[in-house]
Image (cartoon, rainbow, N blue to C red; front, side, top):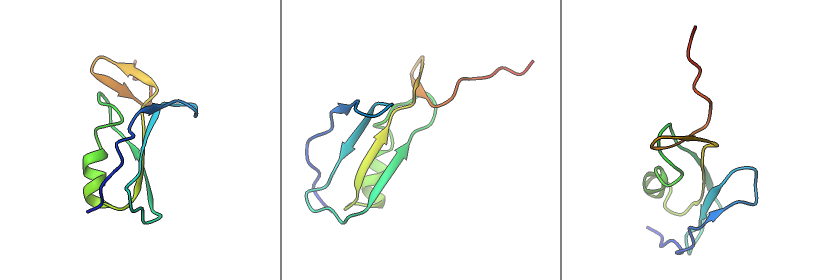
Length: 79
């Protein structure tokens, strides 16, 4: 399994915050991670490192703040 660099700061150069992590010996693969509701961009990183240990990871944060984290879409209450 590859070692990952320690650079995991939140980046904001796109229209959404994200974290980019890259293994020291990258394979050229890249996984784009989209989390579920109530969590953040760090949730899927450990799983992604197990699935594709030599892939670069882009973990995006949902745009809508929620009590415990973030989500991608506004909650719509049916009427």
